[in-house]
Image 1 (cartoon, rainbow, N blue to C red):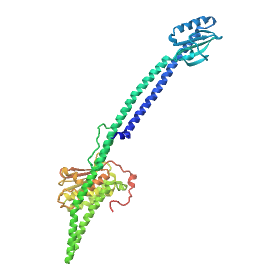
Image 2 (tube, rainbow, N blue to C red):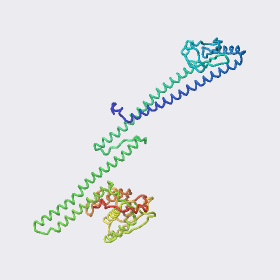
Image 3 (cartoon, one colour):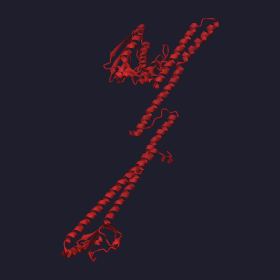
Image 4 (cartoon, helix red, strand yellow):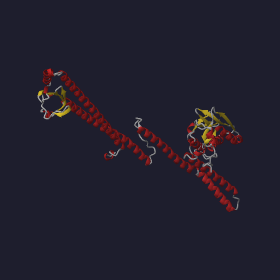
Length: 473
């Protein structure tokens, strides 16, 4: 990051702003503390002056006590070095009985704070004075504020020094933290630049501290993982389409050329044209399946969700495929093992399509004599639709791959099918928030679609009237 750009950094500005606010808070707290200290010191000084004034007032109880009063006053003056304390007694006629200062102006009764020069003293130190009546005399007692001023100066200097150190630490630390955070944000920016340039394997580095930037990095990396998987899927689909549709299109062209040649020879072309139409229908079915998968992955059709009973779905599938299985020398059985309500929120047509694809996959790849079971079972807090067979199964290394579009275990493509059946099952399961799992049935294959707990109330089940499917034109 260039130095000219550092000051435009949001992280640095936030750190410096936090440091400035901390300094402001320190100043405000210090000002309040200083004010309280000053008030307390002045209060104690005023209290001491009141007590001194009371001592003199008690010493002069009557006219005969004036001598004792004067002696006491002079004793106090002798005990006050460097005029730290001031005393002055004046009679009603204006004669000064005793005193260690001569004010330049008459002193009014009550409290005064005046500089020493106004009291005839050769100092700028302020004094706190209390003037009042003691019988027929006017008494003034005072105390220097030099100690208070010195303490305040010391406290102010200490506070200023502490503020300076705190400012250096706060601004320096805030700047360091800001630059450090900005570097991590710059790393995120560089990663995004690499992704924009086509490097989908780039990932945001993480510090391992678990802070907010680490959490952001983790979320971005998850999004990049999904983006990479999506792009790779699109690339794979493009390759698969080019590979898997090339042969059917070639066959279609051959059949059309055959029909053209037969017509040129004056022979019947019905058989060749029927074969071409069948090939075109197969291509159309493949593209419809791709369109359904794309719409499901795009989140379409959720408005058709209603309360669906998996028991009823299983019964419908058994009614459709029981005879088909029997014609192939297999058996299709149903089992209901759910210990809780088997109703889920979903699209009935899609759930029937899901079960149909699983059953057709078993019928297509299992030999005669295979037993196929369609079951509704409880798994944890959810309910699962399970298709289990005792056929050849799928090797563990291939179970993730068979869920990809156009992927087929039959590399020669001699068996009918487009390689999209399990891809559509995966899309439907994901659309319903269900978990699809392919497991070893020992022998055979067990495919489960687990729907997590989602109770359907009577009111929900009543709202079942929906429009036509957007996926089945």
